[in-house]
Length: 352
Image (cartoon, rainbow, N blue to C red; front, side, top):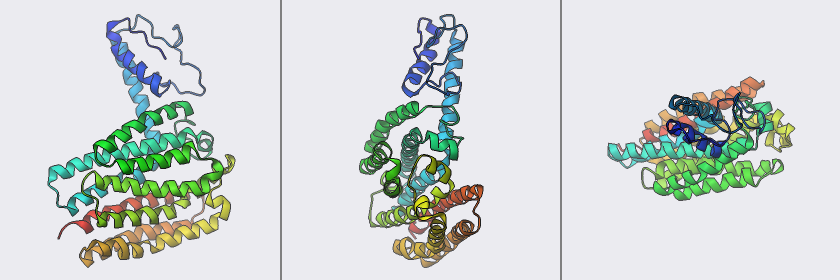
């Protein structure tokens, strides 16, 4: 979209139009169902009429912001709980573990928020740029099936966010973790194929769970053996159970020829695998990160007991409730359990 800047009051139109060139043709707020240009009646395609006023420029900019907010919300909502709260909570854990002053802790939390949001944005733009057909079956609320974006515009957003994420990692002292996640995303989404999903997705999940947690701690406090213990446990245990998410997505995965664990070994095995891991999780949590955190034993027992309810609820639901809506809710409860597990870290790592 090219914007005429001949009217001095239209500077906001110029800015909004320039951004739309980079991110995609969604400025007007109209839904996109093909790659054709957006036209307003009586205008030359791709231009704003010279008679528009500064108020029109404000409306254009406001319209673009509203659309971008809606698009971003649809883009990030499904994975928000599993991607954003854990690194922020782990930043808090690092701060209380080192008894940092309030200003340093708050600064670390702010850095963790920025890196977590960029991490999720990079993931979901890469994922959804290649998942339009699958999302039509499984997640029609997402930007492409909802007509709010195209694969090309999401790809532009991905490559725009990548250097910003790299810069944030460098500025905040967590560049190795950021680069690890970026490499994993590029390998899986840009170099992988539906047939390689079976072995590339577990690598992506383990890298993502580990790198995002580690980033949250690293931007706040020195990375030590205690942080490694938690990152190793969370980064391995929960991704092993994450194959459950493929049960809810079988229809779309089958349509695009994707080889997922549930389509290879069957849903009965995946449900039992998931239920076993979630049933044992409070016990594994108590004996690994809780006991190795040198916390008072009562805090470890209390934390494990608190995690038993959501964990065992997930296990029971996976075994007993097999319809698609129930599986979606079980998966969301699983992501909540994941976040709650990380939320115990500040309690266990606080200095007595």
